[in-house]
Image 1 (tube, rainbow, N blue to C red):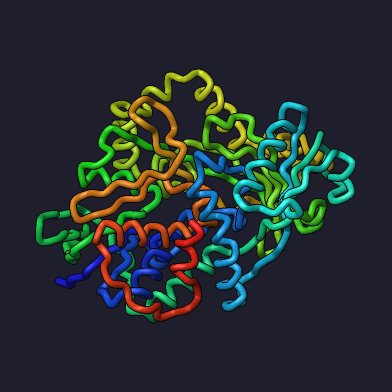
Image 2: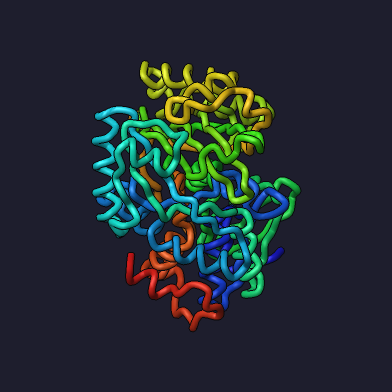
Amino acid sequence: MKNFDIAIIGGGVLGTSISYWISNMYDLNVCVIDKESDVAKHTSGRNTGVVHTPFYLDPVKKKIFAKSAYLSNELWKKLANKTHTPWNEVGTIEVALDEKQHKTLEKYQKWGIENGVSENNLVLLDFNEVKKIEKNVRCYSGLFCKSDISTDYSRLTHEIKKISIQNSTEFIFEKNIQSFDNNDNGIQINFKDNSSIKCNYLINCSGGNSLDIAKQFELLELYSDLHFRGEYWVADSDYANLVNTNIYSVARHPEFPFLDPHWIKRANGTSEIGPNAVPVPTPETYDGFVTDIPSTISKLGDILTGGAKKLFFNPEFLSLITHEFRSSLSKDAMVERVMNFIPKLQSNYFTKKGTSGIRTPVISPDGNFVPDVIEREGHNSFHIVNYNSPGATGAPAFSALVIKKLQNKGVLKNPISQKNTLWNFDSIIEQI
């Protein structure tokens, strides 16, 4: 049975970045465990590819996420340039359709400046000024963020993996975790194929499965989660350049973590509209609805006993689910929503579905969506739950902050000089 100093569960952008920092600064036996065949198979490889500028994040309530996103822009850029990964400065215009939404844009502009965005990079425009940039966009006003980037997080995660492997991290793929045996001597991780490994310390950052794993360590037992699939439609090539900037709309339901529809310029040159938010039973239900009967039954039981039960008595939430579900079944309904700000679109411009992704918001015991990431220390373990958008954007800096917390807890001691100079740990920590 193999023994490791640290085992990281989750081969997404966060888990892979954490492995980079540990292997870069310590001579420890580190492994990353994932049930898939490679890194970034789920949310980290199924997103819009936008490197977000944190103008829409509350600088008080979302301080760490905002700071991580701001600092990580340059970190991602350095890696992209080094590895020839696409790095397209497409920019984003967040559009308001009325005076009330315009007030939200005014607030976002102030937040962005507080989060470190320069005033030249974040400009409030009236409808005529928006049309000068994008003639096919119709709105009341727009907030133009020039520094938003389109990239490929899957490729970037693979590049981090390469460096981490060079620093001696072992990646263990296609292993489904069955259970944990946790005692004072460490943790035995038992897999469904009857194999096992041991580690002294475990870091759980397994995305849509992170809450379930935390509960196996008797943490967050009164919390529950829901899985929402976001679906996109790809514009046919003849219409892909109707708009050449990312266009987001002000959220109609800011109290719920669902993205309103937007127009996205992908790093591969395609344009997409979406997403909706379709409730699905598992964090891997990318098509259809029920693919795993036992997981579906388990999820229903969780809903009926946890905080999600209270959420389903919220009439506004039920109304929203009904509307989003309709959009998932009807391409026409999705296009109609985007036509509110790009009226030239037509349903027949979209003949192919884009890559779907799944977001897993956590629900508190009182039935509310938890607005921020949850971090909990367990016996021989550290758990990162509810790490949602813009998680990929902020992963390099946020993962460095995780390392600093583990240093402060005495889990990681006496770092060596960095083996690789891609990102500078001390510089990041000083700025956060």
